[in-house]
Length: 124
Image 1 (spheres, rainbow, N blue to C red):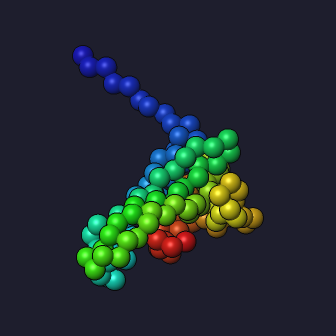
Image 2: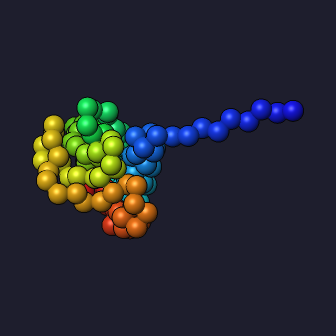
């Protein structure tokens, strides 16, 4: 006889999984943009998130690199979005530490999520 366990995620855990999916979609969007615009492969962009008291902060990190013609591109970091840990609401950033007013999308609402992914672009 085998024992199977059922894992039930709470709302915040679901929002966190959706936040990771959002980051993954941003990475794919950036890779497509790089390919379409002939950007060098060594120009790597990552999207990560940090957990705050109320929000997951989605951060874009561009690594530094030197192009083939010798031009040095410094690293760059900026906030891409804030995601409410309880509700899944996505906000644009007003700055490094706080979101702008007005919900843009919701990661828990299927229709809103699909619209978010349809309109997703690596620049906001």
